[in-house]
Length: 465
Image: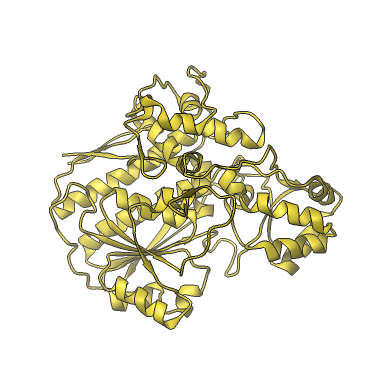
């Protein structure tokens, strides 16, 4: 028996799902659920995403849910149908911004700003820095003044958190007087990631890669439980949104998720907190069991190996070559846990060679030709794609009794968005949300949201026997 998937793009009816609003199309969903508000921060007013994003995300959630129903069936769990909606997809997309807006401490949102930098030739480009030192070295090499560089780092560092980035005018004017070749040279010599804005969208990459791994696998644990992944264990070593989102969604599918974190660091100043934890992190990591282990040390790596010995899935987002250097790569861990699903969340996959530039959502958007936004639309979408890849790999493990190695990337997710995008001319018929805190207390959203230190979405899926 095939699972029935109810999603906005599949049958044209499930725009609202559990949200008690008359949502009639993509634009209504973006307006009511906060996407226009967040995307518009850099413009100073609400602005729709130039993608049918909630349709695309709901479709991916529906296909992921169908894969989970397939896994439930082969595990003997009584689940036959799954439903989702565009509104639930939209709330997932704004979940970290919603958490920040409803956290214990107030949120500081800078003013409008944040278009890509533009060279003297008129070529747009995006940059990504791993830390303040790289940021400073790059702008020093470009010839910027120290005060502007110092003032620009805090807003640039948090641009994906706030969806706006008003850089000091000195930096944007300097970029406009500098040739693109010079900017690229400065980036290479200082460790800054820099990519040009694409003239043509990339749309021909597979959403993820999957390969058999080791064997023979033991049977997946069959335990009484209402959800497809009930009784399965995931070990997550992910510090960024892509992999953390996948772990979050696997938890909604019923898995027990053990998150490995390095020794605690003080949260940066000015960041909304929930119980001492940044609200954005809490939105993706609530419900996960946390184990502290430093993977850069032998003891930390031994602790991770011990956790994996009883796991069904291992996820990480370390840079290329790091897992192999630490003997935590797929082949090494297959010897620890035969049948393991080993998942790597990357920025670029193999598309830019073995040493790609540092990636971020805006940088990958620029390279792939996704309509630009400072919302983390690619990372959220990539997290759903990775969840689907892992769930499908677990089905293959049951069918073929072998583990699987899967890899997804922000770039492949961006290409999938491009390949599936299309025009949506539905007129706006509902008010536009301009306050996420108010959305969080709106009774019309009560069935789709919950409060856990801050307001966060409930599961984007409902499973039915």
